[in-house]
Length: 132
Image (cartoon, rainbow, N blue to C red):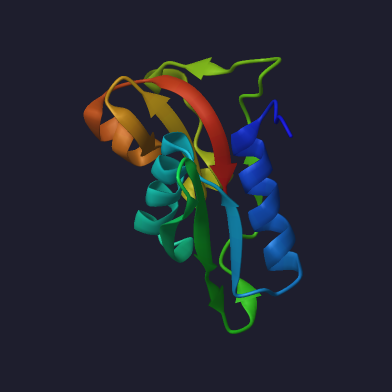
């Protein structure tokens, strides 16, 4: 099965698993997905993630979801830049999401990082998704 938007698929798996109150979910592995999950872990939206190899050439990422008093840590997660419409932003023009309570995840020349890290590094790039 071919996916046109692998990152969007992973975000939907996370969203669906949290609505079903599951403790973890599984998604196919890729470097971009691992980098996005690393940002989510650093920002405190997920507990952990681990890459497992099913067989040679086929890997999956096991994502451990985070809850606080029974409520999911991620209230909203949405894809911004899609395959049909890429969204790029200069760092000066990047708006704060939910007045700074949420984060935007960017793919920059210095790697995948949150909007706060991108502002500190003074680099813009493609806005991958927004998380609150």
